[in-house]
Image 1: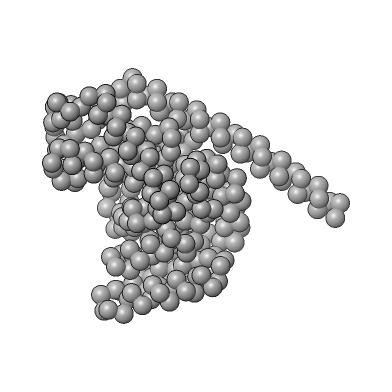
Image 2 (image 1 turned 45 degrees about the vertical axis):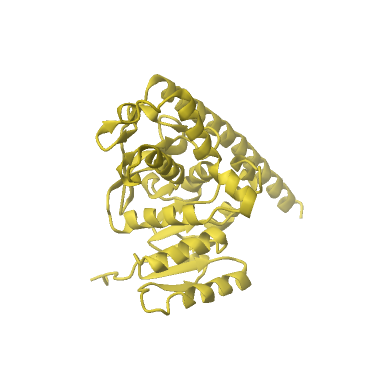
Length: 327
């Protein structure tokens, strides 16, 4: 009889600002037996593990933190990929694509073979594009590969709407959908406070100008933070930790996550039920005509980027094979 597995582990690939913040959040709010931190920068990795280990000595933490290898990470219950080239001020997420695809390919080569039961969570940007390619590179089922997508954008949206309505953010049901980037949009037609549609709850405020201001805030918040301090870490670290909790606890929570949309031919954020096996099912959402057009435009833009990236990757492979042949 196979030995029952009692330990649960979360591997974090990348020990930079986001990876370290996620690890710290998981230590302070324990949901697994151990956190495995992986990074090719050994000096940084060891320093982060020692520093994070110090945070466990107060007696509260039930989770252990240690450095590990890519192969060990591939056997974890959840593999979170935060590793990637750092986004520069005013740099679009899509401009990061080529460098981060190379990093992603290297990661999967080093992790092979990956546990068939692992759930893969992409955090690095551009998250929708990387999630799309991670499906192919990992060999895992579609449902086990997902990205944080617009989860943080939606949290920002709920926060600002809660301030306007003077209610708790947990009472707000509203989503930012599509790309985690410039073409994202707010599904205003589905937004509500409790069971009350937003158009009734905020009838005096819900003008076109009001909507535009909020959309600009949710879309530009990350850029403003990066311009001032060089990165965003706390918000996305907390969101990623919550997603890990939903998975390990099989909570079947509905969140906007980036996963493959068969009808659109790309990965982008739509509401989904998340649990122990990853994306359990998509949650249907009725968009109005304008929102449906925005979704289609968003998908068209992402598909164009994917097609361009696939051509470049094919050209790179052909060049590498030619050089190896004549070496």
